[in-house]
Image (cartoon, rainbow, N blue to C red; front, top):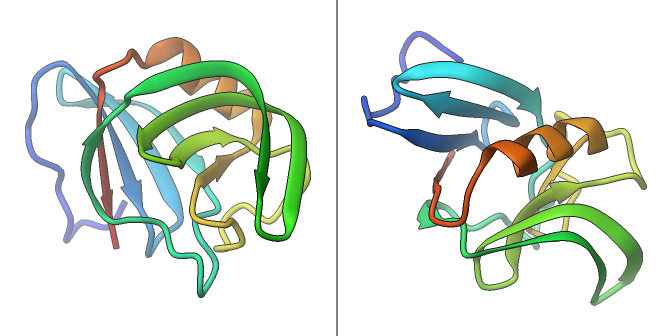
Length: 127
């Protein structure tokens, strides 16, 4: 995280997603408890910017969309409609925007975040 950006000093848990740095941080009580590289939306399929809350969680789902069909996508946490944070087993391009709009994490990191976060956890996505 650059010195120029500081998240709001919130209480409790929240997730910070920086699309410029292609990074995700998990905060608890104002302290970083976890961080990882991500892959956000590629040009033409941008990741939605804003403040959201985790709406639903699924251990695994088959995701289908324009140009992809991915069975058994792990550790999905939806935060805005079809936008989610989830594991990605089909690529290793973390740090580069390659997704169809979701926030892709390495599978082990997605599992950690899935187990840590709860429905209602704040997700702050910015560029």
